[in-house]
Image (cartoon, rainbow over all chains, first blue to last red; front, side):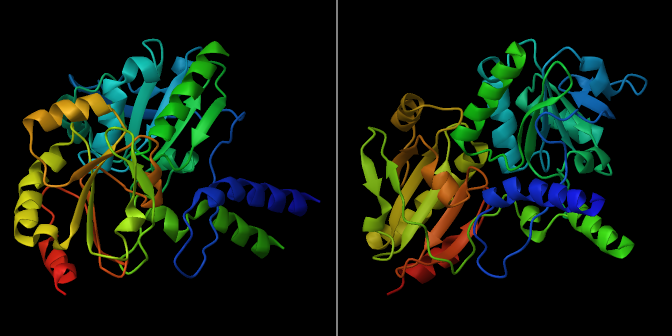
Length: 192
Length: 165
């Protein structure tokens, strides 16, 4: 019985993402993911941060649990200064008010150093923090780990009650529909 | 049973290969997807009128994209050299800009391609365009001959090859 339940859980987790994958040219590959699904509690984590103004103090890292009661957007992205990530972060910045709103906490997460984060945030004028997940432990918790050593591009919306309200495990920084869906999810979470 | 469970769990936590290439578009040699993309006035342009009939150059770009700006002189030079042997299209992504903003940009900046505006992201999804400055070159058989991103990408050899009768 336990085995059946486990298999069901794993297969069930795989289906939504597999459905989003483009058709492979050859050799179909089974895609299985982990990470909290909608309705599940967002795993807590603590990470060092930087923003456009500098590197955050070591004694004051970002801790997800401290933002309980607020809507939080977690944006895992592969690498600072690359074209896709620049497009995404610049869009988040330019459309911050319409996508998120001043009462929403947004954090970007990848494995880059705090120094790189600070330069990237300053260049784009990011109005939110970038967190450093050097060994991608948090990315693994959120099903955002990539064997290339960089996070996959995913977004999570954590509702004020600490549960996952929305997730997109294949966020496309070039697709206007992905931004629309994210903005709608944030509005819903803020009202929940 | 333990071995089976351990294997199952390993599968669950080990990402499969395609996820590593999340941002990658279609591969060289694949058939280029045929899509319709509107121009700036909203009039649909059927790329099927060109794909498979003549070589095609596609670039996904945005007015705010620094790498696209850096790439522009190379595209201009390529268009000047290749001329009408290749159909050149610049597809604006509808992220963080509007048709009006593109029009204002075009009043100040001459671009060497026909400008399209993919308001619904149809071409972006079909080609899995990973970033602005993404270039796809398609040969006269409709197969992808080149893909690349960045302001310093060297697409000219591929463009010359597909333009050669």
